[in-house]
Image 1: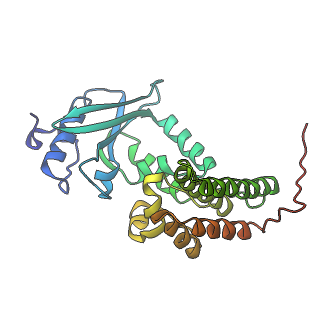
Image 2: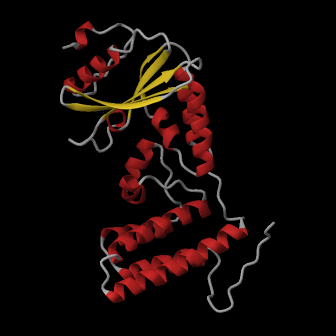
Image 3: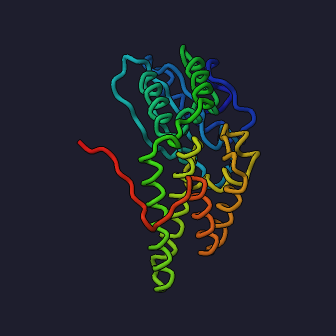
Length: 269
């Protein structure tokens, strides 16, 4: 067993962590300290941020590789009773992910590195973390000025709600699944309309209700408080009437939707 007292000097301390977690982190990265192709490593995820750590939390480690490396890795390892989940990516690939995420309207990768704790840095990792911080607060592209996207998004929301209502009246076993899937679709649509990031499903309720979480994790909530309250209410208790009201609210925010005579034309080559 590697103890914290015999760790290499270049590894930063993690005194805020439980000693078992800290020792596990150090023991895991010690295997990689001799690799000259590794530029540094960060502790990321729930243990780095202190957000919702539970018995199900894994220990997330992100290795940063020099750009002479042309492969990337992702893996898991059981150590001291904990699951260590790790990634190993070259600098250039991480930069690429920053850009791809921004175009997709998400900040997951930038957040991972911006909120991570640098364990060791042999050059370039601190600068990459600064870039991640900058990326985290760059505006997300919204699609409000794209008439084709707006009209087709409105039609999908309207049409899918009809299907959900039909399933409910039929007593279908598929109703609950489509109910929650539609909440996700409404969130994604309103996010694209307003240029707001929509987090992964396990974090959405926190996005809507927990300002402390959002501030600590570098997340911008929707500016529309009423939308967030309506959406959270739909999540917390299945209520078709509330879902219909939320759907109607978003359609109105998108300019309204009239089924009789709706027509949209677009160019095709």
